[in-house]
Image 1 (cartoon, one colour):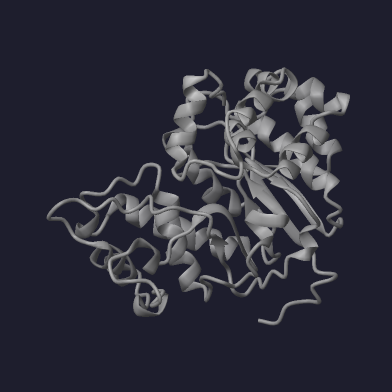
Image 2: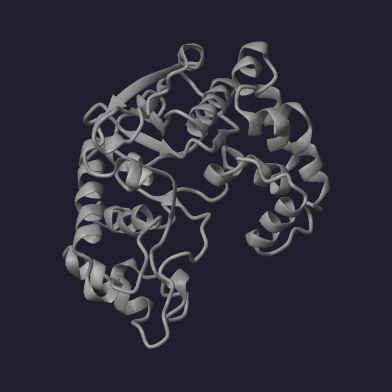
Length: 334
């Protein structure tokens, strides 16, 4: 399917937003996108789950001033229904939200805990060849003694959905090493149509959740279900590793910081400067200060104290060690 001229093609950017922390992260994302120089052909949607039987409380963004700020920053709030996941598995929001986006228009999904550092039009998206974030670790599967190995577990999923397993492998990596197998962080992904991608994502995720292959019976799918289904969806749609140049998303164009304590601890100084610059205007500050972790970390200087705990050029190799040190100092706020 031929794509339009990349310089004029409209692209829908989508993040999830709901009451609580995600709504404040959405403000930071929208503010960073607005400051990035990204042209208006990239339209931002904040996908908002609606109340229903799968939510104990109303998940909508209830603060009218916060909603107004998102719109002032260029976002369109997009309601969607939670029919399959909801409160029991909020990671499923990213799957169900896709089905509410305009059909047939290319999209890029980002986790809300992301900052856009530069013009998104610098990224040469090939919307016919989807991919997702390679900034990941081997979180799934967790192999059990005497249980099936990586090959048996992943092949059972490819077989379940009639996909070619061998072509998904990175043969430069050794057998039974996690990086040999197609695995992404779901912090970003894209495709030419959100309805096609979203429906397949939903179908695969529900089948894995409700009827897992025997090889998965010892494996936890919470919170990993979205990241287990994602590589299968991408592979089935003709995508895979390396469909984008390295160093742009999860690099010079975007930063998936995940939590503000981790941002202050390990990201480069330019990311910290961007965060504090976009959070400084009074209209943004007035909203973000309502969320206590952001107030303490950004506006009361706790984030800079976190940063001072670490040498950013010589960080601990394991994220757990970074987290534990922040927690010991009483600065783990999110």
